[in-house]
Length: 287
Length: 304
Image (tube, rainbow over all chains, first blue to last red; front, side, top):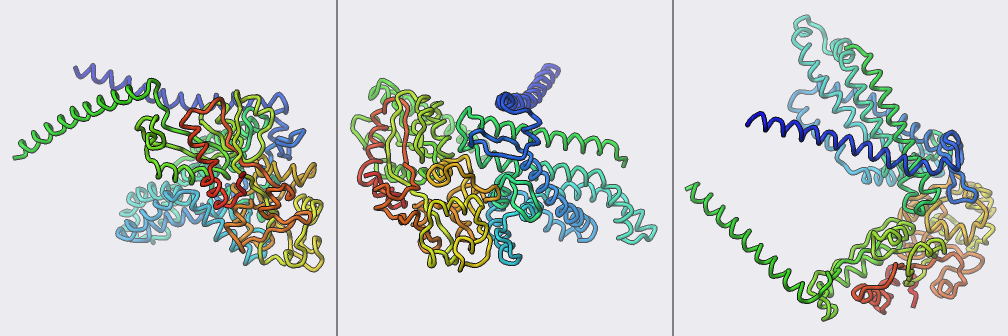
């Protein structure tokens, strides 16, 4: 009886796992199927490395290099801002504040991740963009920098959570010994906790980067959506914003429509490469 | 004690199950009597984000007034009245009619012959006209100094040939012009491109707003912004953005209806094949005087 039950259980688990992998495969197949059409018109290299996007013009220009750079640039700015703050906040939470404070602060940081992205976008548009227009004399505040700042706030909870979880374990492990040896708290953080949580910081970066690159709504509202090469204080467009902005207006089965799918495929490719790269680095970091 | 409560609970639950079962049976019989075919009580609209608020307003009023189909017309069965409206862009509206994923498509541009070819038994209902006004922020002095822009001037502003406001009118401040557009592949931009820009291209660093609302917000927020806000939204935000004349014609209701004001687009509801009786009732409601009034209240120019 028990054996039978176990068999059913293991089979259904296998089935469910298989199913979720199948979903991924189906999505990839669908994306490829919808995007290969454009490669009759334009070579893959021209699509990725060309610099003009104007699919409704005759003849159409469909190249997404500015958007690829825009996506990478905005995410890079976001990570530069979010990483030090995130790791710092995690150290503060695990090593500086007492248990009671920690229990109050941690949930509110987690709550930050639950705010819908369109709300972030709204705040970005009405506060951040306006701030740069008024105080820094920008002709228009929409820029890579504003997008980066907004994304940094959005990915912070991911970095903090991943770092915090492992740091608290590490701190517990070394606390007794380092207290016994009379090592100061800051020395312990610098030479014990930080090096030991290298891996989880990296994991946090992957999670946050993936989230930053895929973020659509909030970014779309504050970067101006101009398909030009990104400058820190200039407008730009990211791939998810491009797709969200133009999908509604693209005629079915037109070149435009398939080009947007191809852009989605490229985005997935980039994310895949980033994940692989980090996975490889992570494997080679020893504890 | 606990056992008794548990027993009572189970019996009530069981009974309620049996009773609901009976209820369903009765309903099914009634439905079978009144109509042979399954009566389609839902109507789906999909498409233009400009038209979606109008349609949902009219349909909400329609639903609140009648609640069920039999109150609309005695011949219809007693089924709840459901009209769903979802926005996703004009082309998405046409797309949904072609693949049958919605009953009606809302389109705020003229439907191309190529698209008409894909829809068997194409029908369209014109609800009204929406005009795009070339609007600026009230802090921009241009509307006092130079109320009228010619098509060439608008072309030069949007294509980036005029970079600063003092190039448009020498007494204006030397500040950069911030051009705001909708997405360049969308319906609204298609109208603007055709009616104003012609072969000229909008400059690459123009801001592409994700919706007409966002475009208007940008003009309200930024004193150097210029963009093509829809006539409806200009009226709703009276005083916060200022529309300019184009080629000497002001974007007023009369000029838009007569066709003198050139940057305008039709608001259409399109349909594949013949209308079901219940759909026809609702379309008549849209085209009725009440419907037209709602369209006008929402800031568009009604077709009748």
